[in-house]
Image (tube, rainbow, N blue to C red):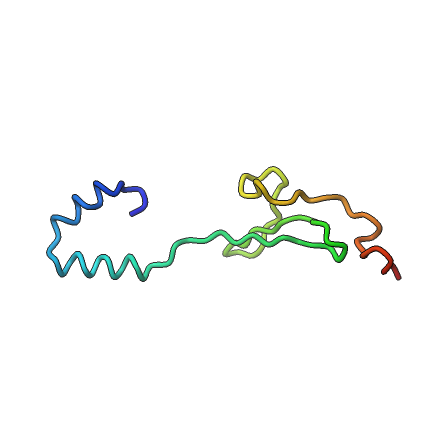
Length: 89
């Protein structure tokens, strides 16, 4: 129902009986909102290696310019093997 404005939504509900409205509201409340899950790949030195998008088929690497990554730390090239300073083997 996200594609219907609140005014249209309220107008549509007037055609339903009270019981039908209550049942519809209960269904809408029980229906989960779709979510987008993004995993940040963080190296041991704390830098960002990249991002993965969780899909039904598995994980997909996201390009650096993907709109969902706006405001996230940019992926950076690996420095010193990704080890924390002073912890190289």
